[in-house]
Length: 116
Image (tube, rainbow, N blue to C red; front, side):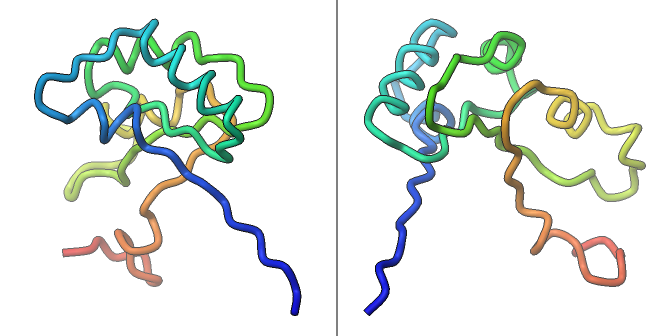
């Protein structure tokens, strides 16, 4: 039987930040990201660049991770707007990080039509 590799994608810095009473600072996010990297997590999602000042600042100076890939949460363009006229999408595309994983596969149809 072949061994299968399990990849860990951690969303603490975004999903965890949405918990009542939690308010991560940029430094908090950096410390947590580096700890997750030391633990061997494969992907660390840093948040959503442009969603709030903390996330924007965090992505302007991303943590230096040795193993984990640093990712961003994002979205495809808003319906009725062009991609270059969508500030939320622009922040994600222009952020400096190692990997971008998004939900494009279920947001867009194969023919390019917008999802409902």
